Image (tube, rainbow, N blue to C red):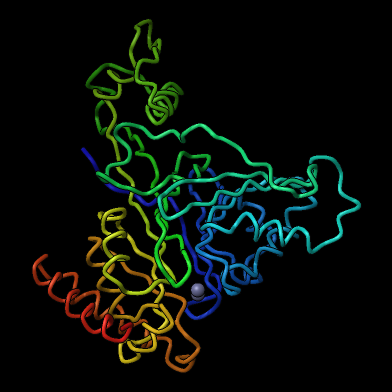
Length: 365
Ligand SMILES: [Zn+2]
Ligand SMILES: [Zn+2]
């Protein structure tokens, strides 16, 4: 039996119209991940110290200015961290490091692993470390572990760029904003729970072995053998008798791109089936021409994208300062569109997308 479950608590610390940042805290490990590095002053020192992975969409000022605070909090603690983002990120991080004087660092004090993804999905990894004078050391790394039954979303062309401690994968594709931008999806591995009455049905006593079997299943060690009450069991067999696999809900983080045929096709190929979409709506639908010129989205376009990915939830952010006096109305507008589009069948939704594309193509023209 499959259910779905949220693994991450999320918050947008700067609110719907501040610098883009999405803070995601794993309820399982207490580890945090950041999407984008806008102003981080609304996150506490303690919250930032939990961050070991940062998924950057692109390095426009409002998405990257928080790098310095992340660095400032981490330097005294000798804590390495990983960043992913589009081509150019390695150079951008190196530039940030070269902006400061570092004569008092101790050996091994600062290590930043940077993953760049190009439009073909190729990932380039470099270590930028104090021990090497922040000159990037390019690395070859083994393919990241992906199990045969996780991911449940088929035929996804997205590159997996980072894996968190709990096995959650950060996957990305590149979309167009006049500059390459990473759109992301967070996909956690399935979790295993004891089925009601299953222990009694098989004359098994509860014990610490249950947790160990759950871990073995999460790590795909189905052949691992457990001794329970003098009897040998394979983890896979035991799981089939007493555990339910619970599929987790993928989350997509989408910001800063133009509503175009190509971007939509890429997103649908890679992220179809996500549960929740966190998406920018820089402009209201009446400002469609301006949105197209600035290569951003409107409320209606964000709703069309979320509906076309099959999402059940849309959260909007990165709302332009034009709407400083009416942020709620801009958010409500996006939700109204989403409710309308969510109820359409696929043919009606395609027609709504085509109609919107015809207009934006004319503006882009
Ligand atoms: Zn932006
Ligand atoms: Zn931008």
